[in-house]
Image 1 (cartoon, rainbow, N blue to C red):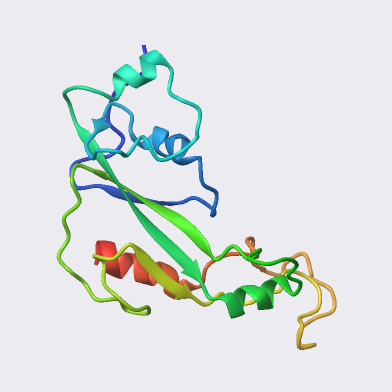
Image 2 (spheres, rainbow, N blue to C red):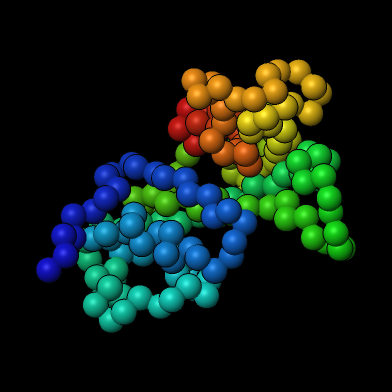
Amino acid sequence: AADKTPVLGVGDCVLVLDGGRAGNSKAMRRPWMNGMSVDNKGADEDDDAPVLDDEEEASTKGAGPRYNVSMVNVFVSEDSLRARRKLCRGTASLRQNEGMHMIASGALTLPERPSKFYSGTNKGTMLGPVVLNKIAVGGKNPDGAGPERRADTDVEPVFFWQYPVAFYEELIDRYFG
């Protein structure tokens, strides 16, 4: 039998970004809902992910700790996205949005907090516009500055498409501050 110890403790909340891909929310929530049942109506009706098998489905219903999922849409500035992509083909081809799943143990009720870097408060379902930084990975920088070749000891970004530090500071301030 699988361990049914809840992953999220009382008052815990995790924020999971979906990479702008719809249809994977069940799979993304599954690691966090061990031993818990769904608390908010419709939380498991919003995607096309593979359906839980009977044993897994039964383990998420009934008594015991409950989890709650809320969605926040993160949207990115079109200008900063175009600067990264350099080439944009087709109408409506720039994906500027990404879903952020807020998974909490029970109903999440936070005091209203104004945004530190963006418009709005933590009561809204939109966050942005996030202005992406252009990060050169390896080689020559676009402005010509920096070394021609990367040395083995040089530190460089791992993720070219990462969000700016201000985005993560915003999340901490809005939801955990």
